[in-house]
Length: 317
Image (cartoon, rainbow, N blue to C red; front, side, top):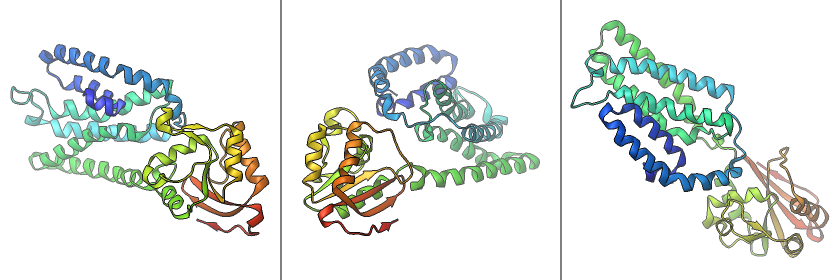
């Protein structure tokens, strides 16, 4: 559990789930273990909270998210009834806890706890607690396994509940696996920069926060000249890196054969500081747009110096 929490801090919510599955004689050893895990992960948690501004993009939980989870939780409770009825729900020396005791809390508690935490500070992203779906999968499998043992009426009801839960999960499952489930398509961005970049060009992130997009595919960005970067994100111990002073960025921009500017999609503006405003002014004064490539959540604008600029600006989607 300590290793899991170090790799993914929200795995700590699964430790709370574990308490619900334990027989009484194991609760004291579990409490000691939980304290040791908490002590081991505390330094990382403190460091993470100090850098929580890097996930300031996370909004509060929406009404539709509450509603969708409440519906799935209702199905899970119904499934747990069918999965644990009769002999399957009995606790014995060979099976010291029922499947419901671990599966139902595993599905409900991590998401519920993260939603409650998000009332204080928004942290809820469904991917962060996706492991909770293991609980629902266990319940679905257990009910399907028990269907032949149930009476006719219960069998029909169980099949309807299982089919309804799966029908509700399929659209969300497909959506979660699509590129559109993310606010940006860093794969497409890496391919575009790799395709369009040529020796003598410069990459310019109009917002320092957008440099985080380059972290997904470091091999694609290796060798490309970042006009504004002084220190890499790794060297800066954050997602964005450290930028050069404005005069140096301006000098690098003026000496570039072309500039591949990476920025927000058209119509979306983020808060700008003085350096970012300077980048936009230099581009407007000394360069002309040659090509704009739109992708999900971002765009790449290729600028030519005004002396070689063309009059048209084709747009590629």
